[in-house]
Amino acid sequence: MSINPTRPMRVRFAPSPTGFLHLGGARTALFNWLLAKQNNGVFILRIEDTDAERSTEESTGQILDSLQWLGLQWDEGPYFQSQRLELYREHIERLYKEGKIYPAFESPEELEAERERALAEKRNPIYNRASLRLPKEEVDRRLAAGERFVWRFKVPDEGHTDVPETLMSGAADCKFENAAMGDFVISRAGTMKEPGWPLYNFCCVVDDALMGISHVIRGQEHLSNAARQVLLYQAFGYPVPTFTHLPLIMKNNKKMSKRDKDADPAFPVSVSGRRDLGYLQEATVNFISLLGCSYPMEEEIFPVDVLIKNFNLDRLQKSNANFDEDKYLFQNAWYLRNLPREDVVERVKPFIEAAGYDWERAAPVSHGAEKWLADIIGLEIERCKLLSEFPAALSYFFIAPSEYEQRGVTKIFHNEGVPELLDAVAEALLLTTPFTKEAMEDALRRLGDAKGLGFGKIAQPVRLAATGRTASPGLFDVLEHLGREEVIRRLVKAKEWLQSNPKT
Ligand code: GLU
Image 1 (cartoon, rainbow, N blue to C red):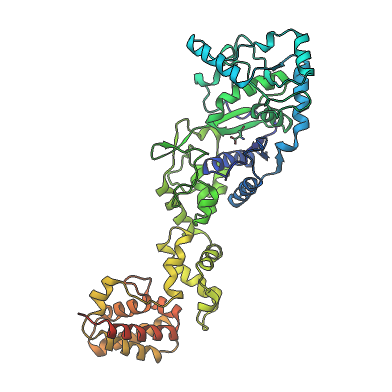
Image 2 (tube, rainbow, N blue to C red; image 1 turned 45 degrees about the horizontal axis):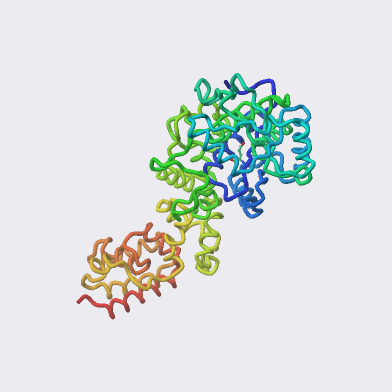
């Protein structure tokens, strides 16, 4: 089963604002968005905030932010269920008048006792319809007296309900025996004067119907809700949308749940947590688009325009998706290197600034600060996989080393004649004009020739003095971007350090 060609494509993402946007939720949003984009459809955002105790504005704000960051802009909404109560009430009234729902007066304790009895007698513990059997006069009297009740939907006694499903189709999972379902509750407890809030299954159907939703893509955990929802659509005479229930996402053989918190700071499950760690929007969209979806192309780099062209419900897999951190990181590194450099620079900036590095001040006067920052980012880009790795990778451009890599001290600094060599390099560089890579390389090669030293013997101590590290991007690139004054200062400082920390 696939897209219903007779209805305009209208899809929605309907998060409950009880926490941040989880990567799994983001996948649901993305697949809906892709389906809309691909079919000239409409992508609607609906906030399911009827659970007043657990819903927060902060969470709504965070979900909206995350969706926008991902680029999943909605065409309609956000609609808030908390503002649509009147519509739900009208629909409840309609079903009551038509005899399709009824008030049930049992307290939670009574229901629990009945449930245990049913289990002990090895019966399906569905509601026993005690309230449905009450005489009409008694029901009216109890309602008028202000007794508390919930609304229950009268499920047909016979037959079965089929969920029109694209992914699980054919599986027995999509056929639900009505007799086994039980008359489900569609509202919280309340009185006629103070009615309880309608519940998820009910609001969802009213909204999806009124919003003209043609296709619902959501998590597998909602498949059994879908059967109840289909019954509600039928009761109202509304067209039933087509459903796609996505497989679970597994990480290290454990199910990822929307209730997972950001327990491990290195591997947050929230979209915002990944953003703050320096994962790129493009990589995140690419990565989640592959969770449970496969493409005929070999490589796993799918920029969003390729996704829009190639996404297809038929590509979704029934089997659980595997959340592979290494792949996510690999894709992030790929986008870092392949996005327009100016764009990457803009995204690195906040991380550099948050680390307390003032790049405008650190840039040598001979370089324009913007260009300088872009250059040094370019120098370290191959070594970084996340935006958050840049401050540490680039730290030596902002702070002169106060200590030196131990391995370098032993193997390089403590060689014979290094203090004198550092002096000679400083002197040579003082006279090197212009202070460019080519001129410096020329000057140091000449110095090497004069001293009978191979190039490495000069480059290694200079690198260690300038960066504190034994490995760096091209030495002359580094020196050029440190600027002459700073390089000389660091060479002198290294020499002094060596004098106070001689080989023992
Ligand atoms: N509010 C529900 C959730 O967050 C939405 C389910 C649906 O898409 O119908 O799981």
